[in-house]
Image 1 (cartoon, one colour):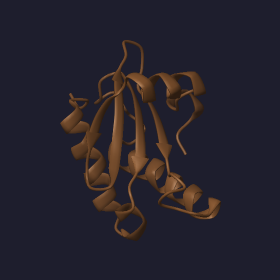
Image 2 (cartoon, one colour; image 1 turned 135 degrees about the vertical axis):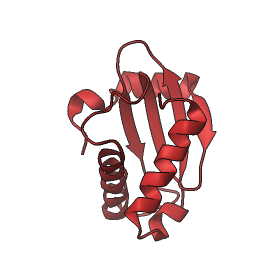
Image 3 (tube, helix red, strand yellow; image 1 turned 90 degrees about the vertical axis):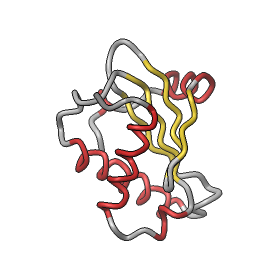
Image 4 (cartoon, helix red, strand yellow; image 1 turned 45 degrees about the vertical axis):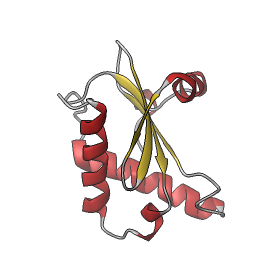
Length: 115
């Protein structure tokens, strides 16, 4: 799990869902809203793809772990933004964490977040 300062608050989440730019990748739908202050990320596993809370929570933990692995504790390589990563169904069947990390990186490149 990312530390609390790196995650979106409820208000920021709602604003990003409303005003954020949409970017698609194999495993995720990204909602991105550029902001001047810092990078904040939220991971979402919808009921539509994972029916039980156990699977949804595991999916969210995998997303956060992939972000930590892909960028380490130093997130300064990315521009300041509010990012929501919404999981798609193919993420549930993917067993390879490097695939997930690569997909997150490609999504951030598409969105123009990597410096």
